[in-house]
Amino acid sequence: MTSAIVRSGLRSALRGGPSTPRVSPASKRSFSASSHHDEAAEASKWEKITYLGIVACSSLAVFILSKGHAHHDEPPAYPYLHIRNKEFPWGPDGLFEVKHH
Image 1 (tube, rainbow, N blue to C red):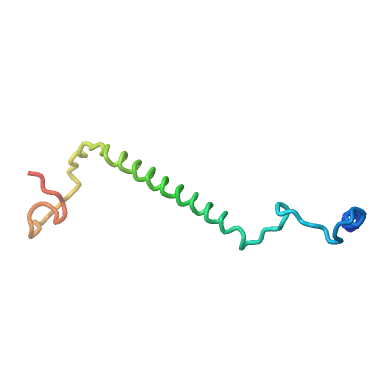
Image 2 (spheres, rainbow, N blue to C red; image 1 turned 180 degrees about the vertical axis):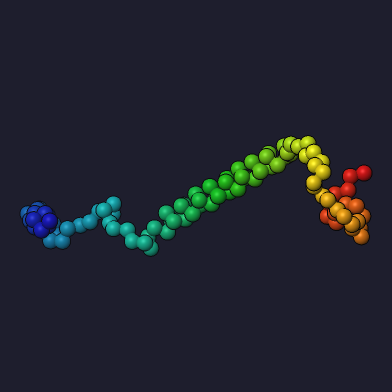
């Protein structure tokens, strides 16, 4: 690496230019303060991706929930289920059971 610097210095001295080599703007080192535009573009990109994901998930949920679900037949009334020796104060059905009339 030092030989490259020496060669560059010798070339510029032979050409009659300044002793310090000039750095082109493309080869300048960019620090974190100079990448503000890149960060804004990246944040904008992810914001758009997020909104697209929200719309996709919401539309999928609406589609799935609008189809409903299949209702199954009632299980057979086995004699050993719901054995009650005494009536409840609120009637023959359970307190939170749906009463079918």
